[in-house]
Length: 295
Image 1 (cartoon, rainbow, N blue to C red):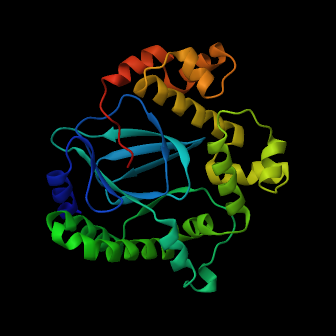
Image 2: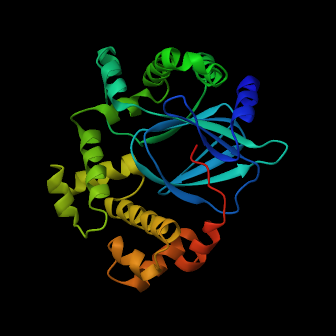
Image 3: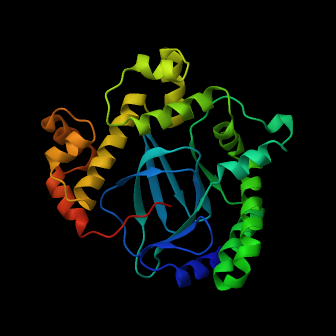
């Protein structure tokens, strides 16, 4: 892991550093966080090289540190908190975006015993074993050999995906790629909510849309996301409102209306519960704060 730390320390500037390797992003933070940062995890694998972090998804908390990886197979609203970081030993990690098309092709070649099973939580922590570490290291080494990226990066990335599919949490990944079954229905429900997050909807409407009974929808949605569909919608609404407040300078009432709240007072109450401060105070604080890590 030390070589990985050395390479990341050399290439990662403060906060978030996109790279020329497709899908690869580096993260470096020289201080911890006093509070968590809500964000949306898209399908990706995040590898911790140095430091420590916990990620909250609904009522579940995932804690990972050096030589661990976190894998997200669907779009998930989480809260991440960096626990251990300093100038001498900065938080160093990287994320690799998961390519569903590439994974789907690989799943077809897996033995039947490794095909999708029952739904599982779409977020998991695993340990980076020696073969996976070797593949991650070879990918990150390409930052020192940019001429090799076009040829080698796709090959190494496919190897990483294949090892993940066959690894500790491969079942969770395979479920997210299935075109039928409960996880596919929950993935469709997530996509529908994200497309209609600013509209009121009932459990009946969502269940009919994804062709599930209400009890089955609620049970399997919670199994995959650790929250109910309406809780998921609330998380997405509040995070979009926060973006509107910070990035577009909207006032609280306008942001509340734009994300679907009929009552500004309800919006403010839920915002304080989610982010620990009223909308205006939180927005002013974050406009001058550093970007927070995803991985």
